[in-house]
Structure formats: structure tokens, C-alpha cells
Length: 458
Image (tube, rainbow, N blue to C red; front, side):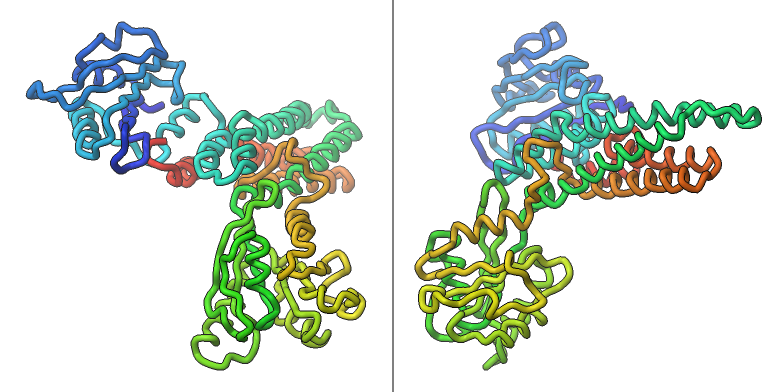
């Protein structure tokens, strides 16, 4: 466990009304007490706030401050913590931090306060990661997912899975201890039932990742199609504002335009692109190349076409050029007000189904709300509820996937009547992968990788 005391600015850098400087460690209270003129902090109760001045070695007053006191273990880190609320001058903040360093503290590393909270048992690793997600949340849904994880949503699910497996694993390990006596402590039918149940639960958590990742990271959504198909008009209709220039002149959009659209808590990054055609000049050619690059990077492709001018063969050729395996496709049939009898069957081809066909009139905003609902459904499975535990972290997803594969190996072993030591090995692997999620099994490299992404003061 850490034995030194760390210090850092806990509020964003820059001039503001106040700044908060946080100290954590065994000597945090004594270090502040040495320069704080007011009440003696080491005589005060935890969770109290005290007014006073801070003076340097020459007895110069640096600032009038409020000192918030948190005595171990009743603090964020589980250590003695003092938070100094001072005036938000960069000069004052830097002078105070330098003073605390001279008195025995050292500057904190990124994420070190939360790392100490984890090491001191204040939270597990998945909860610690939720702190960073909560700070970065840009929508209500992202905030809610992070809060649930911070309060132990994923942790409790993983711990239940792991404990059930540990209970049976102990019987398997006991059999190994008595290997020469050919005894069986773990009923193989019960073990199979348990492992199959755990695999089903893991499937449910893994299935939630598409939604969780979309909530956390947002969804790259590209609007693509031929010139004058209505791409910019569609962007304006989705945003309900005149964001893109709309013109009858083909090739008006030369560069990509990106905007955010929140649909039921999911952030969609909507990208309007240059029309797909043979470029008439170098600048347009660059724009079309950017379109193809954006489509390759997208999670959702809104392919929009003009039902008056576009032939089925042209639509099929465009999709063959644009689609890649990881793209969710919605085919947007635009200008339906001018040709209301256009049907899916007329344009049907192997690249999309009737469920992916969205007839609209972007200029009249016809069916725009339906399009938004279909966008939402592309990333939200009907089986996944926002009230359930949701996996939003790639590291957790990968660990769950490996844990599930190890349990599937247990099922194969039971079916093949392999020896107990192989079954025990696969169970150990699964337990290890589940333990990585909560930090019950962790390495220094893993912790460094996770906490290096935090801001300094957290």
C-alpha cells in the first residue's frame, strides 16, 4: 500500500472563481496543518470544513481558504484526505501546490487518487473505471450507465457468477487432492447445469455491449448517396435546424459536416458527406474519397437516394461500393411526396431487407421521427433493457468473452469425459478472466494502463 502523500489540482486548470487542491496520504493532515492558520486540523472531526489562511515559510499569506477534512478510512481514497478550496488564480494554485510539495507531498500521477481508492478497498476495478466514464459522460444515458457501474451494477453480476463457480471449483480441486482414491465430490450433471446457466448469463451481458458501447462512445452515422439525393436536407431535418447548405447544384457538399444527435439518450454522430459520382474536379474528388473513408469508419450507414432519378441498378451498385461487414444499413428512399407509389419491391436487392427500407420526404420532414426510431433500434436490442446491468467497457467485454469460452471448454470436457485436471484448468481460467474485471486478479501493467487515462486530480 502507498506510504507517501500526493497532491494535485482536482478542478480543471484555468482561471475560475475557485480551485480545489486535493491531498491524500498518511501525512496529508500534518502537511496542511504546518501551513494552515486557523483551527488545528489534526484535532478536528472527519467531514468538517474550516476557514483559515495558508502562509509560506516567510509568513506571507498566500490565500484565504476553506480546508475540508476527511479522516481515514472515511474518504474517497480510504486515506487521510484534505481538500483546499482556494481562489482560482493560476498563480495562487501553483504556489500552494509547490508549498505542499516542499512540506513533504509529491505531485500525483494521472488517476492516482482513484488507484489508491481501489488499492485500499474503497471500490473494485470496474467501479474505478466507472469514475472515468462518469467524468466523460456526455448524455443522460451515459451518465446513468456509469452511475450504475459505479454503484456496483456490473461488479455484483460478476461476483455472483464468480462465487457460484468458486463453490463448485473447490469441490473439483478437492477431487484432485484425492486423485489416487478415485472419488467424486462434484456431481457432473449439477456442474453441467451450473456452467450452462453461467454461459447464458454471460451471453446476456455480452449482448448488452452493443448498447453499452453506443451509449458510452456514441454512434458514427454517415449519410451517403448520390449528388442531390437530399443528404444535406436530411441532416437539417434530423437536427431540426439549417446546418448544411441545400442547393439544386450537384456537388455542393465538398467536405464532411459532423453534428451530434441525441435519440433517447444515445449520441449519434451524424456525418453529411459529398455525393458519390465521377468527380468533376480535384476538390470534389477529395471530398468523395473522404466519403468512402467515413463510410468505412461508420457503425451505421444512412444510404439516401432520390426515388425519381435513381434506378435500381444504380442503388445496388452504390451499396456494393459502400457497404462493409461491420456496417448497419438503413436505405432511405427520399422524395416520396413526388412519387408516393414507389415500393420496396421495385428496389429490392441482396444488400438490404424490407425492415431496412425507410420511405421519407426530407424536405417535408415526412417520416423523420420514424427514421430516428429505426436509427435507435439499430443499436438497441429488444432483449436489452436500460434497467439491466450493461457492459460498456471493451476490457470487460473481452474478459467476459474469454471467460465464456473457458466455460464452453468445460462443457466440451464433460461431454468428452476428460480427466478432472483438465476441467479444473478450464474453470480456473474462467475464474481468472472474471477476476480481471473486478480487479480480484490484476497486474501492474493492467492498472497502469487503466489509471493512466484518468485526469491528474482524480
